[in-house]
Length: 160
Ligand code: ZN
Image (cartoon, rainbow, N blue to C red; front, side, top):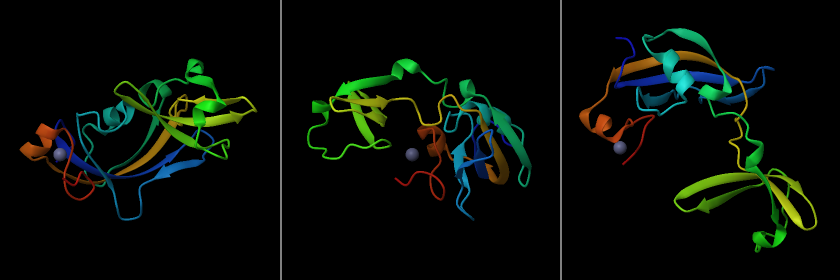
């Protein structure tokens, strides 16, 4: 069986940047599961999974446009410190949830001054070329319910 639309796919991966730094990795013995063709994983990786079979190993090099997008300078903003009431020690690297209408986002503090806090709403991996070392662990047909939901259930998937 090879990966096609509506396959439930389980794979091991190691994600590195172009300098070889490991950014993420599936835990030992716990492959990541996703439903193929539903945008569960980044588009560039999903594209390269098509047609692969169990046991196959490959390297996928994915440009930012097919991963977490280009880095947007406009997403970096200085916010008056008084907007952070109730937070005592604001430090570079802290992350805060934001809400604009229905959109829930995550911003990372990149600079701290007396009056202003600079926050960056880019995804931490925006603008980065991503290199995935992938090994396909398992492939099965998705259930009708999984296809309706657009994600897989059970081990490696959603529990509900
Ligand atoms: Zn579901």
